[in-house]
Amino acid sequence: MPASPIRRLTPFADDAKKRGVHVYHLNIGQPDIETPPEMRDRLKAIQEKVLAYSPSNGTPGFVDALLGYYGRTGFALERDQVLATTGGSEAILFAMFAVANEGDDVLVVEPFYTNYSAFATMAGVRLVPITASAENGFHLPGREAFERALTPKTRAVLLCNPGNPTGTVYGRAELDQVARFCRDRNLFLISDEVYREFVYDGLVATSALALPGIEDLVIVVDSLSKRYSACGIRLGCLVTRNEDVYGACFRMAQGRLSPPGIAQAIAVGIGEIPASYTRNVVVEYQKRRDILYEGLGKIPGVFLRKPEGAFYFIARMPVSDSDDFARFLLADFSHEGRTVMVAPAAGFYATPGLGRNEVRIAYVLNCDDLRRSVEVLGAALDAYGTQPAAAASRSASA
Image: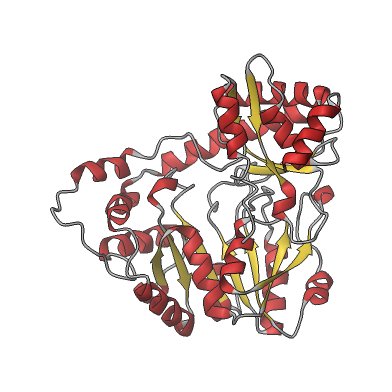
């Protein structure tokens, strides 16, 4: 199992806090925005005296809430097309297990959500990377890149739109290209759409459910974690119009018994959340994005394209080893009692050597903290490399 680049530096952050250093956590997608009261209030209202198993495919109330959500999104789905899962993570695992045997291949556009590597390892699947370019904002390469990556064991394409870790929003033409490729090659399209609402500057995220001609090949994985700032309830869903895929995933769901019952009781409240909640959250994230994009753009040697969605981006830093730089930030540096935690980007690639001078940053803190984070990063880059003894020590302990 690969170590998580998002979490494996946590001991360094803990040590920094013990020294009295304030750490700005830009390494992990944990929003600071409040979970809607329509969900929190349902937690207070739970009266059951026995916290029992729930149905394997989800409680009727939660499934109804999901069907209502997708209906408002423009997709009329049936009850046997939506399966409740323990977070989006389980949905991705179920999808991989359903469409691929051990030793099969799944094509993935890199950089990608690092935990895909962990899920693929669990499923015995090999991720075959198709590399996107930072220079064009990590948009999809042409079809020829997908054809080159194809192997006799390829079973699916895995996309994240809007993208984690890149913040890229794929346009309709890009997705139509992938749909034609999947249809022509009879491949499943696993579409991670956790950040569907988080798009900026007037853009719109197209769901794979809207792509014509591949209805039976599309599997959407989704989550409540980021949409409603409810990461801790660990609740998501898998959506498919393919009866065989649904049946396979339902049997897996039976094997793990049930998704969290208390979480589903809370999540029924999503149908009561006003549309203004999401609009306000999107406005807030766009402000945060602009602060970081403009601030980091003024630091010499930093390169990034303006992210279009989600709440992440990949930035190229003027360093040769972003893993060492991330440890330096936590172990050897502070600016006015503050430092920043970032995620080294190499773990978001499958191709060895890529991402070594990049970091993923999540803009999940308030605007004032993000402004201070930019100041800290600028000072850290000025200081980095002037302490060779410390760098050697970090390298030896890695």
